[in-house]
Image (cartoon, rainbow, N blue to C red; front, side, top):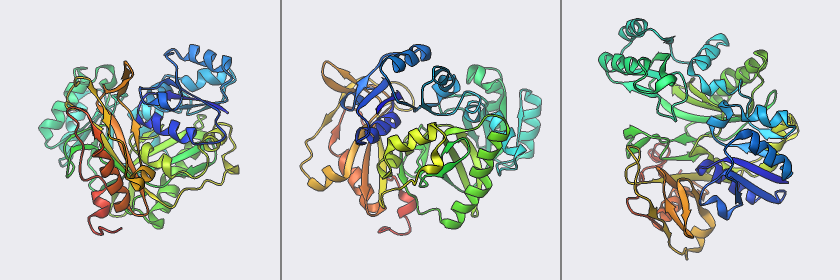
Length: 427
C-alpha cells in the first residue's frame, strides 16, 4: 500500500512513524513533511490540493491521511474524492465542526449535547450584556480558525469586553473574529477524547490529557500543547459510557442527520465537572501532541484503521491497543510562543541505554534539514515520547530522552502527567 500523509508537524510525523512500522505500507509520502519525516519517507512540495490529487493518482497512492485542520476546512477531502481517491478525513461541510465555533455550539444545542451556556453575536452591545450576566472567569472565542489562539479566558468583566471588542473590530484575529462566542467558564479538569468514524460507525481511542500552558503547574500562556499522556486514569468506565452516550454517539448521528456524515477523527475537548462531561470544543483531526502518544499505543495496523474508516468499513475492524502508557514531552524553541527563534542545530546524543532505546523515541515537528543537518526552525520543535507499563515509567523514559537532545534555547515543561501522578506516584 502506498500512503500519503498531508501535513508537516509532529502529529504527521507520529502518523508516518506508525505507518512506517506497518508491514502493509510499501511507500510513504509527506506533503510537505518536515526535515525529520525524510527519515520515514519522501517529502512532496505541492501545496495546491488539485495538483496534489493529480500527484496521488499518478503515483498510485492507495490512501491519503490528512493531519491538520486547515486543509480539511479548505476542502481537500472533497477534491480527492472527486478524483476517485481514498482519503481519510471529513468533508469541507463536516469540517465546520472545527472551522466555525458558532456552527459547533449551535449543533451542540440542537442535539442536546452538554456544553457551557453561551451566546454568539457580532454585536458588541449583546456581547457586553451577556458578559455582565456571568461570573469571571469568562470565555471569549473567535468564530473561525485561529491556529489554536482564538480563545481568551478573561479574569474580569472588563477584560472579557476588551477581548470581545478586539475580536469584533478585526484587530485580534481578522475575519475569524467577526463573530464571537461568549460563554460561561467551566471549572473542572480537561480530557481529550478521540473517535474514529466512517460516517456511521465509530471507535473510541484511549483518553488522553494535554498540557496547554507553557510553564510547570499549568502557569503561563496557552500554547498549542506542551505535552500529553495516554491513557489517563482520570476517567473510568462510567465516565467513558457518559461520554459515548451523551457526546460521541449523538454527534455522529446528528452529523448524519444534517446530511454531512462525519468521517475521520472526531476530537472532543471535554471539561469534566463533578463527574459530568461537557464539550469545550470539537476538532476534526488528531490533537497535537496527543497524536504522538496515541499512535504508539495502537496495536492494530495504522493503515488498516485509516483505510477501513475511509471506505465506510469500520464496523469490520476489531481495534486493539497495547497495554502500555505513553507520555510525550514537547521541546520548544527559545521564544515560543511569543515569537520566532533563530534556527539552531539539533544534536541528539547516541543512546547507549538499551531500555531507553527500546522505550522512547522522537517525533520531529518544527525542524528543517539544512545542508544535511537537522535544525530547530519552528516553535514546537519535537516531542520526546516514552512508553512504559506505568505512567511513571513512561514519563521517566520521556524525560531521559529530553536529556539526550540539545539545541540552543530549548525549553520544556518538567511536570507532564503530574495530575495522574499526584496522588499515586507509582500508578
